[in-house]
Amino acid sequence: MSAGTQTALPRRGALQAARLRAGFAAALLHRLSGVALALFLPMHFIALGTALQGADRFESFLGLTHNGFVRMAEWGLVSALALHLVLGLRVLALEWFATHEHTALIVSVCVAVSLAVGLLFLLGGA
Amino acid sequence: MNAPVPTASLADPTIEAAPYATLTVRIRRDDGFQAFTVARRPAQTVLDVVTEIQREQDPTLAYRFACRVGMCGSCAMTVNGRPRWTCRTRVAAVAENDGLTLEPLRNLPVVKDLAVDMEPFFQKWTAAHGAFEPGAAPLDDFAVVAPDSPERRAVDAGIECINCGVCYAACDVVTWNPDYLGPAALNRAWTLVNDVRDRGQDARLEAVSGDGGCQSCHTHMSCTEHCPKALAPTFAIAGLKRATSRSALKRFGARHFRRSA
Image (cartoon, each protein chain N blue to C red):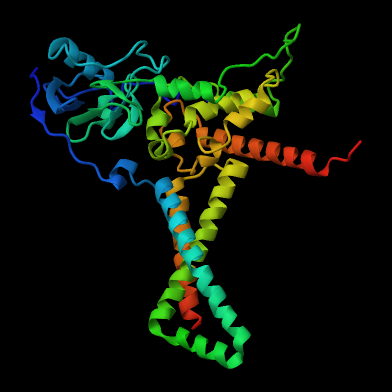
């Protein structure tokens, strides 16, 4: 029919090139939540380390956690821990038991579970 | 596990095309996208479209095909952003707004237009010890392999690979780590790990370990989602992860816990 016309090549972003699909999103969330937990661990040990300097020192440090910003960070941390756990279980199920999954559904459930755990943490008034 | 192509019936909406309808096809070439217009035809495949353009509109268009029936694995391309075998992909099933965007496969060097160089793909197939190794003294007689044995069933699950490169193009890890062997090579290695006649297992397991090996798989499932033969390289790679871990533990145990004679 008709021969072609030229148009310029489109630019592609990294995410577009990786085509954000459920499996990719799962790996991305798993990695990001893992990095968040790894960053938290040194702070956790510092907090525990204050107990070595006496109960008063430890209690005064814990007083910081009543700050609203720290409370939100704790919520994020609990959610990240739950997310990392359930996404890890997904990988184990895939790799040990060759479970054929509906990836989008399972990843959505993983995210929902982590949000629910985070909500329970907030409702628990911790 | 064989081809997931359903038997065509007259009720299949991908067969009939509306009379006088046209298709706009954008093809990625060296200097940008080039647009063509092609008539819609009944049961038209993406490969039919490319062939019509090459024969009737632009003979300089480069692409590759051979069997046209889903056996040779030559004609894979990126169709509307997704790698597919084009000979078994009907236009009506994938066209968006009466348009197709065709690009060469991802993760492979482009020779020209839609034809990619498959050399790295097959080099990795070889690097993963993808050839049967009979050993120094092959068996005198036929090996007896029970069809329902776990090993034979594991081989059956992956043996129908036609090396079309769709999984390799779909794999994000190959994009990030050019040394990664890729789903097809690792799937082939897994079928041979389960071949009870093969005598090259230690070298093969070593070849599929390490930075470019099975442990680098992030379980994105892209290969399994895109494989036109409905194979599951993700699970083959998971099998290799288990086999290499077992082998490493055995070596560790033999080195540190073996009773001295």
